[in-house]
Image (tube, rainbow, N blue to C red; front, side, top):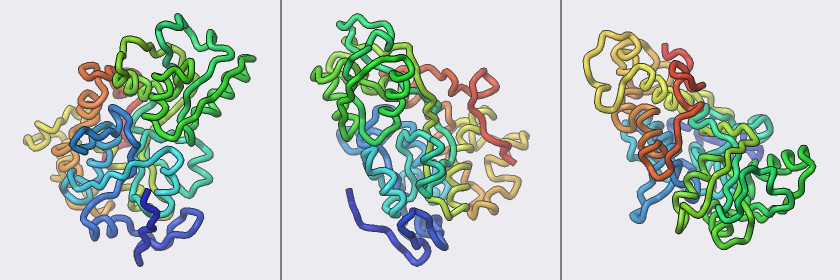
Length: 335
């Protein structure tokens, strides 16, 4: 990981992670690209292909912020980070935003000098086992060993659950998600535990995906979303409302293919930048939200493209469905 600190006159950082006179938007515009922290490889969320092109739900958040601030979703520098590296990289100023399947918790929100800017995927911790074990529930895994990624909420959740159920376990930890998958595939543990979405992605990349199964047990709440440094409220708002624009667009029925169609809907007109002053409050151009939807798509498009039922990951919308369709996903009022 690049250890150089990106300290500019407009963004002075102190050891705690809080910024003084921070103006991340100006920094991003000055450098001509958004520096976005992503995972070292999580299928469906942030994963590079053989040519080094990144894609995924978290990558689309990066792209949305770039489209809003720079007018071009392609102007992103992706910085792969392990779970242990991610917060330091954000605190130090090495990255402008962290969009890396990161769980929003009270401790992280209140002790690291960071702000969570929303939730782009509501998840929970689950378990993947080899079918040959003939296991139907996590409660059949008393005394088992678990492959775990270090620096995540996973181990504490596992310890809490097993303690509550008077069960024992052994943790086999790895630094990265691919290493964790490798340990599982090599038989160094009985089960792999992580967020259910990550398990689905990892299972799809196994040499024989049919050899493993993700159990139905979910033992925690894992709301995942983008993170920024505290001390720059305008940047916090830009990241927050870039994500909200994608959610709002889906609720309004606006897609990347229809965003430029003439509409009499006040909500659509605000999204297109034809009415309202949302852009002025954020310090952005009028077409900031239009650029997001046009270049990245609405939330539903991103979901189906990256992790939906037509992909190898094949995740249902579940609670990540819009609130008007029975889920818990919605944007605050876009006005």
